Picture 1 (cartoon, rainbow, N blue to C red):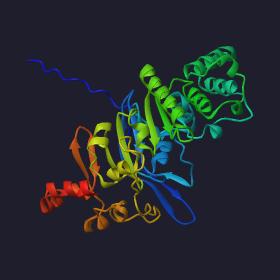
Picture 2 (picture 1 turned 60 degrees about the vertical axis):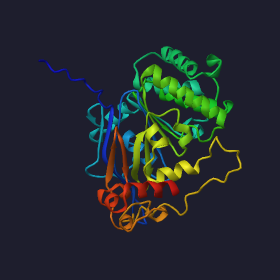
Picture 3 (picture 1 turned 180 degrees about the vertical axis):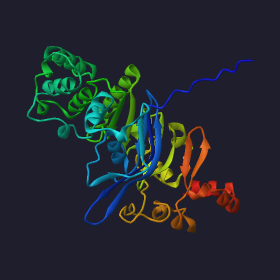
Amino acid sequence: METIVENEEKNLLEVEHLRVSFHTYAGEVQAVRDISYTVKPGECLAIVGESGSGKTVSSKAVMGLIEKPQGEIKEGSRITFDGQDVLKFTEKQWEKFRGNDVAMIFQDPMTSLNPTTKVGKQIVEAILLHNKMSHEDAAKRAVELLRMVEIPNPEERFGQYPYEFSGGMRQRVVIAIALACNPRLMIADEPTTALDVTIQAQILRLLRKIQKENNTAIIMITHDLGVVAGMADKIIVMYSGKIMEQGSVRDIFYHPKHPYTRALLKAAPSLKGNGKEELQVIPGTPPDLINPPAGCGFSTRCSLCLKVCKQYPPQSHDFGEGHSCTCWLYHPRTVQVLGEEKINNMLEEQ
């Protein structure tokens, strides 16, 4: 009897044991400390966490934007894109890779755009950098891209400067440049931070539309869990250069396991309240990554900290279907001593 095996969709991006450091006068800053994750074609992965957690640094490593000699991707790190080991790329291969296969949307469009050059010309330059076509065809493609990102009167806007656009429209231009060569993966680094709530929703809707129509994979980097609720397929929660928890949107929002994830969710305003509730804060400050703690990075701020948390780094525990958490609370010995019921009560009372 013939056995039929379903072919699971291959990963587009695989990041394995990534470690990134920066060499400063004060010492070596261990910005990313051994993280692993995957992204499939057409999937949206959100990476959330406080400033300094390593979100942006990890994405810059994927783009080959860690500047040497100050920045260093450590030995043993591995990043593969569609089966290619990108960390072995030459500079020429990196140039082809950026824009063609992967594009990045930065959080401040004014620093991404040249204020002295018309937006149409900037899009045309991005198209011609990776495509052999006439200037006239590139200009037509640029107008199409402006229309695709829902900029009204694209033919007229083509000849305008960035200062003539609103913040939301400038971000749309940056997205148009990122789309110039139909990348298979887009990395959006806090793409809605400087925008008001209404414009944020429009940009997120636009990114969702691009994701569905082009089957483009997206890595969304943000500190705002609310931004990713309707956008992401998977969420990674980072803290002090490590992954604290990862899982589906439902896992993270409805079944959070790590005390840090739960604290982040409690710090976000609720739509169910009357608007007068006091927001919860996470006391303390993140650890110094020049001298990272021996144990869990969150131990000094965690209300559920055990003695072992400060002494040894916790292991990752798998809860099934891609949901995992790096915390001593779920170690078999902890569960044996405290019991599952007591651990659950401690988490609820946190």
